[in-house]
Image (tube, rainbow, N blue to C red):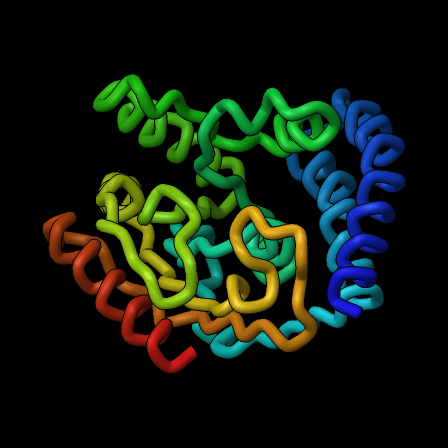
Length: 233
């Protein structure tokens, strides 16, 4: 049944994505936030399909921790699921991502119109400066910024070194960091065709202040909270 349901989901995704990409392209003249609201409808549709066909549900803990103003969210990255679901869990936001994702037909075109902070990882410190410059711009425009500090997707139970770019951006902009843990990789594994039924839990932590603090301290506190929650998830 998992194979059948996953196959039906893949077929449905292939069917709905190209026409929605045309809708996304038509939003080009609209303001950034208006484009975001229209294009994010695709991710809502995909989540509905994953629930109906694959049996993937989700719940959120800690919504009350979200600040009233834009902040930087540092989250665990296990699958493609959270990149979709976060669009409907959190206020309008942009993601820091590798620029190659924008080259994917249909998906990448819509993604480019959502004002992401696309970077060339090979540029090193120059990429960090790009994050700072465009991150400040997006926060000023009313967007939150989501960064996956491990830099790539990791399997449940695994971890990578946490990069400090997100903590550094928050400190530079004087906004708090919101840590987020989840277990989406159990049901929607990295690069896996088969999706398993169940409930994803997304856990939002209390905001972490950045004013007057060292970036290393901020990053270490974020890592400790996220990894501690991952053990319970």
